[in-house]
Image 1: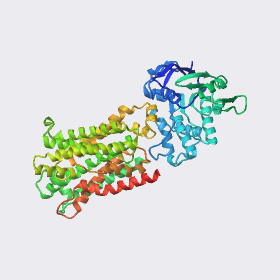
Image 2 (image 1 turned 90 degrees about the vertical axis):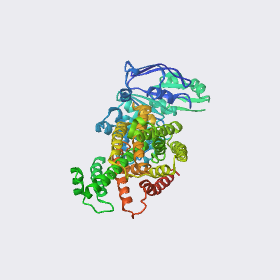
Image 3 (image 1 turned 180 degrees about the vertical axis):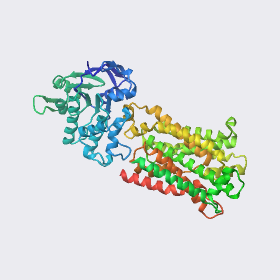
Length: 242
Length: 328
């Protein structure tokens, strides 16, 4: 049984007839140019936007779940995270427990360990560097222990070290039996860490499948409208402008 | 960390209340006066404590609690440390509603509660207009929208004053608008306490939404919380609190702005945990300000609202300056 099965998902003018399914233990990378509908797709899956179409979660229609039960199963890390107040890191991570209505120290501690922010827990989040903050926002979602984690460009504007840290955390989370869907611009990292890719173009899923099927020069050149060089056999995989 | 500060704040509140009962132009034994008043014995001490200082103390505490809680809730909802019932048009809306009732005898069926109801409606309408104009998602816009709606409500209030039936009525209304808790009986508590309970309950039930909103509207929605419904309930709660406070005590500015700001470091900046401390500290602040009013030399008494504005405005300027330095 698929973890999530999406059929004919649409949202007026922004998303049209998107279908895919994802098994537990897999990372799905949503790729495509700016404005292709990546964030919209994630927001529809996360319950922020109301799309048309059918979504089954663990074999049952997602609409049957109350918003709170849905939030326990699907966690969303939005693109631009920011705290309005000078909260402590531990309080930010604890916010991940809001859908559960508890402050489970085990889940909060585990999330902090997975994201590698244990030494930062007593610090104020607004005094951390951008890379440290990115890991804190990720830990907040991990604390909710969602079956499916949605991350909207979680490594945008991060340095190489923090990019690797966040990608490895997401990979490990999927390997532990959960599902991860992330929007990502770095196609090399997408090839390296994702099991499935969904190439979005003008609100539609232009291609879906394993990286080798999606990251072809033909697909990428058509969607990004630039000549692209692809070498997935290299280590690490290379996807670059020609 | 919040839990230890609540008992401390409660103890400080009791001390402030005791101080308020014992301060006045005539030295009066507080306990004996209270005993006489409760027993119905006609004594000077009983009259001064029971009929003058007790209402004043209870009213200032209740008005302060309403304003402190409303400020904390509004700042949490709008994610803006500069949000205040006075700066978002709520106070002016409430004043307009209550003034319209005083002048035109609106809502005759509501009797004594008419100014409070009209104040609630005015505050709620102003807040909804501000939210409609700015949207809570853009905190920087909210203050501008608040300014616009405050100006509108102020203009409408000026119109009401302009058409005052007689100069005495106008003078009475202006003094009321300046804000005071003197010369109001214990009856006013029948407006304030239900409002504090109802408004407080509405705000308290949305504390999870306030906490989640720290990270933005999208995060709150993705956590299964309804921003639209919860936000409206919070606005209603704030309107009830501000409407009741303004209809009883007139305009007492800056309490809702300053108090949450003072309490925030004690509550680890969590918008859900700052609610109760803000209510307690707001009660204390207004009561202390009223004690100061009574301690000033006799003659023409300075109005409570004038004093809180004189003290609060410089703090507000400092807050704006600090925000400005934070975002160069």
